[in-house]
Image (cartoon, rainbow, N blue to C red; front, side):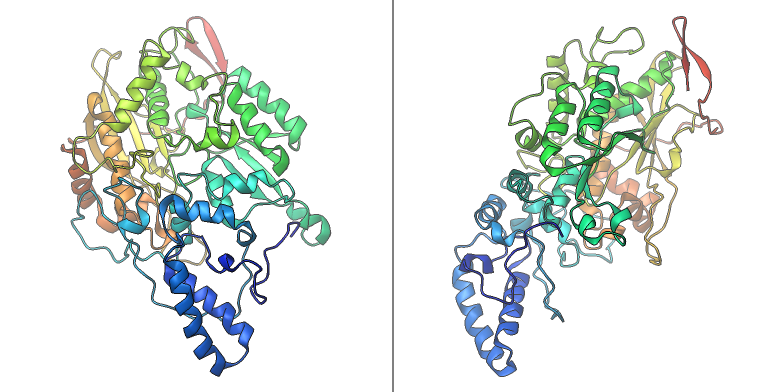
Amino acid sequence: RGRRTSPPLLSPPPDPACWIFPSTTPNTRVKLNAMLAFRDLTRSRAVVAVSALLFLTCLSSVAAFTPASGFHGASLFAMQNTRCMGRVPALGPRMVATPERATPASMFAPGQKVGPQQPGQESPVKYEYDNQLLDKNKVEGTKADSGHLRFPLQQEMADLDEISISHDSMIILKHHGSYMQQNRDLQRSDKAGYAASYQFMLRLKNPCGKIDAKTYQAIDDLSNKYGQGDLRATTRMAWQIHGVKKENLKKVIAGIAEVGGSTLGGCGDINRNIMTPPAPLADPAYQHVFQTANFIAELFKPSSPAFEELWMDAKKPKDVEYWRKDMVEGSTGKNHIPPVALTLEELDKKISEAQAFDQGTGIITGDPEEPLYGRCYLPRKFKIAVTVPGDNSMDIFIHDVSLIVIMDEDGKTLKGYNVMVGGGMGRTHNKESTFARVNEMLGYIPKEDLTEAMKAILATQRDHGNRQVRANARLKYLVHTLGIDNFRTLAEKYFGKSFQPAVPLPEWHAVDWLRWDPPGGGDWVLG
């Protein structure tokens, strides 16, 4: 596959430590894999029974000092045993073992008090799934052992002799905004070319679908120099660069960040790009939509410094993200009202305080690096949209959370938001337990409750979303399982308040904005 492979499990590895797989799985499955490999070596059932017992006895003594599921220990152990980091070949028929239960001790970060294995609030109903049984969802273990989105990606990106990365690293890389791909056009016609065609796609984070001229020029140049010479617009109002080789991935990600762009949050089990109407109108309602989206994008951005450590050599970019500038008074002109802060320093302080504020209702995890997400982040991607009443240009019904700004009678002052939850279009083919779903009205919140209400919804999904079966992990399945009334009851426990009855809304219209419009101030924009 165009990469060096790990030593096959059918021959003894040169380093005995390689028998301990540092891949977040409970000790049961670690021992099972080792026992299966040893079984194939002996080729005798009678010998296997005795040999496996003796081997597991030795393994238990090794496991006593091997950090198989510790927080940083497992990751550091993995870094020292890179020969085990590749894709592990199949061992033939698999035995099924009763999985160990994932507990807070094995899945939480130091200091973390609440999360999926110990929710901050109890559910009003009993689920058919169990978030302490993760044997069918390896992604959760990979996230747990990543050291907050660092490992094993950090050491594998440093190895430029290999043109691809392992499956575990791919999972972590998604949170940094990239997917590994191959050229499928070569899959049948050129096997050798296909094996050597590993490349990476980068997806930018573009709140409101906006990209400033400086960032656009940079990604255009980077695509020509390191990619396949094109840019692709996504259905969530973001941009993608394709065809980047592993050896150039760091240069491209750093190049985007240096001019005020970012790929952090483009993919992964975190908050994704936030959609709004694509019209840059000066109307106060639309401006509040844009500022709300910008603020939530920063509020739900991962707090871990892993992004800067991996791609920026632990340094801050030369420029700040352009959507952060939009939240500061006077930074980009008359169209951004009202400002969230007077300076960037004040903005950073407000966002940090909003992330860390703890009213004691189970929202804050206790994880010092990720107070909102915790060690394992969310069960699946989390998509948000914001709009004004009547403007359905971003399909308000298909998002995990949709916010509709409600203005005061003067038409200039923001009053609050209607909140909708539980939408999504994705499904798995021939799997009836997966389905598309439109979201439902949760209720109304005053503008001053926006931060805590959104944090409460995120915490509800974080703690109660289905982590046992990844195909059913989106928020829409939790809302479907609970029903909107029980979901509201659970979210209100985290919120510490009640959602008020929703404000009546006008009919929705699918506005495409493909026309000339006057945004205000004498200018015109073309959609």
